[in-house]
Structures are given as C-alpha cells and as structure tokens.
Length: 95
Image 1 (cartoon, helix red, strand yellow):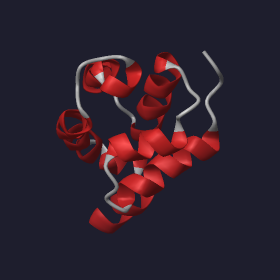
Image 2 (cartoon, helix red, strand yellow; image 1 turned 90 degrees about the vertical axis):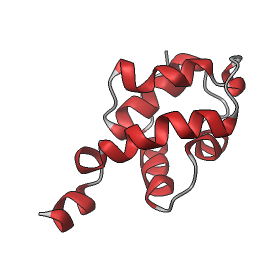
Image 3 (cartoon, helix red, strand yellow; image 1 turned 30 degrees about the horizontal axis):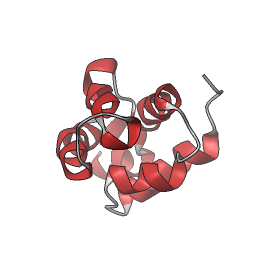
C-alpha cells in the first residue's frame, strides 16, 4: 500500500461537498491507485470503518460487480452519516 496522499483526501472531500458522486470522484482522484489504496483513501477522507467502506471492494472499476450507481447508493449515505466527523465546516454550522 502507498502512503495516504493528503491532496487526494482533500479532493474527495471537496467533491463530496459539491455533490459529486463518489464513483466519479474516485475515477478522477484515484485512477492510479490499487484497490487497497482506494479503500484507505476513502476510509480516511470520510472517517468510514471497514463495514461502511466494504462495498467499495465490489466496485466494477476495482474488478468487482457493482456499477457506479450501485456503489454510490451504498456509500453516499455512509459518507453523509459521517459528515460531522470529516467536514469541519458542516460540524460548525450545525452546532
């Protein structure tokens, strides 16, 4: 596994804030990463645990069976659920 790349984590968060689907963000930000690197970056960016991020291992772009829309339907609610932990601006505005 490669070390985490902070700029990629920031890009993933910025794109999530803008409403860009995770599948599209990953294609842009993580195209040169292997499966484990993608999973680690998504976990770190959105403070997801292994259970929450597990659908990512089944995504078609990582040689699985899930389509982009299926991946987004499974992971976007988890990302939103953890928004207070990964998006400092959202946490401050909801306080």
